[in-house]
Image (cartoon, rainbow, N blue to C red):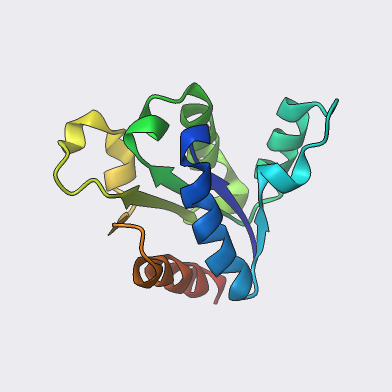
Length: 133
C-alpha cells in the first residue's frame, strides 16, 4: 500500500518514526526528505505523491492545525475518490486539548489517539493493515 503522511514540518521526526514502522510492515511511504532534490518543483512532487497514495495519514498536532499545507492536504484527502474511506487522522499527544481547536471532520473519521511510542505506532500500522485487506 502507498501511504502519504500529512504532517507539519516541525513534526518531521514524528512522521519519520511512523514511516519507519510502516516500511518495516511492508508498506511504501512517501517521505519528503528522501524525495526532494535541490531545484525540484516541490508543489508538483508533493501533489503527485498525494495523488498516488492509497491511504493518507494525517498527524494531528498543534503545529499541523496551524499549517496551511496540512490543511490543504486534509481538504484534498477528504474529497479524493481514490482514497475515500482511507484517511486516518492520528492525534498525537492531544488527550488534554480541546477538540474544538482541531478540524471537526477529523473526529468523525475514527481517529487514533496516541502518545507516539512504539506500541502506539503499532496501532496505526494495524489500522493500515485493516484498510489494505
